[in-house]
Length: 259
Image (cartoon, rainbow, N blue to C red; front, side, top):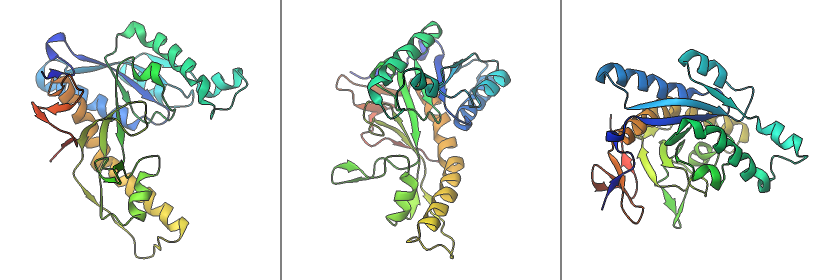
């Protein structure tokens, strides 16, 4: 039996936006939230709180602009107080447990990972549905494994000679970039300038930055808001095995969005 991930009859989908930096993806979702509310006269989803692990992020600014409460727990300070390096993940669950406690009064049902740069652990992952956007088509596999994962997915795709790139929204699970795929953006042709020699690390880095910026506008900012909209409408569902469905149809490799 397929059950919707969110049943709209239970009211708007309550969101927390998790961020570490500029929060551009969070802004795009907030803009979409307002647009849909004006069109429908009611809110399909609502960002009820922002959380940041970086006291220097734009969370406070965004919170003020959209009248949303902000919770700040600086992860650098957390590690400093305990005399540990941030790379030490053995104490990260402690940080995430306290984060869940801080968010509990808001009764959020989904977390939007909009440039949240900390590795998340089980306490946070299992507190509510987590949705992330990744700058690669995660349906592409090699040897039974997802090919373009990690923080340099665009660079890796270019270096491997991919002619197009795409963004993917997926459910956050314990293994990084391995959660079930929700949506994949339309393919975006890779643009390479004539003067770039991809065997040159500097040129490859320039190509990565240039194409990743293009992908934000034509990928991330397109499918992230749409994914949340469709979740809030109850169009995504799961069966007893955890398999994903969209409008009642199985999507083992995600739903490919078309403009």
